[in-house]
Image (cartoon, rainbow, N blue to C red; front, side):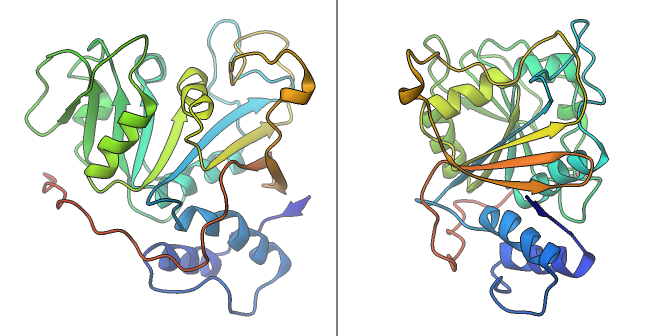
Length: 274
């Protein structure tokens, strides 16, 4: 297991690489800094025009909350910092409406240097109220993906997509790519992550495990069962020590070339009000 050391200078290099302003291959780095460059460097590149990373934090026994729904302190401080770094490297962070309603997340970058990504909520039937905090906070672009004709505030973008049992993950990613959102973080919940995983659309899956035992409560990923272990998905996995948590970095797509230019953005982001 490699221990990462995200020093200010290594994070500055990673942010520069994300903006195509620096490489990740040269420099005099410690072993922990090089581990950080390896871990986060993959988030700065795209496969087939889009990078789609999912992150889930859980306990040693695979729980993401207690039976009462308390999930506030599942991840340790270093696990939370890791999540905020992923947000800082993303163009958009995506959650399902159940997570938006239950957790009322801010989806902002507070524990790492970087800009806030666009906030995307998958809300097929229009359950998310327009006064939800993540829609009212104007510090980032806000997008709702829905199948119904529910009016939204003028400064909230709406993507209308057809719905079967669920809105197609492939159509969601295509719509986001059409808006110039090429680095996508799927943050939750477990059902939403599983939909993208089973559709074969994730580039990487990050599972951050915190050293606590909960005993009961909802589990993280809920994928379709396999009849035998020979059919189980076995991604290439590297293990990193974050400090308070242990991270399993699972590669689900071929590694892109070391140097990839950012795709042309389809349109400019709307101006944010201050």
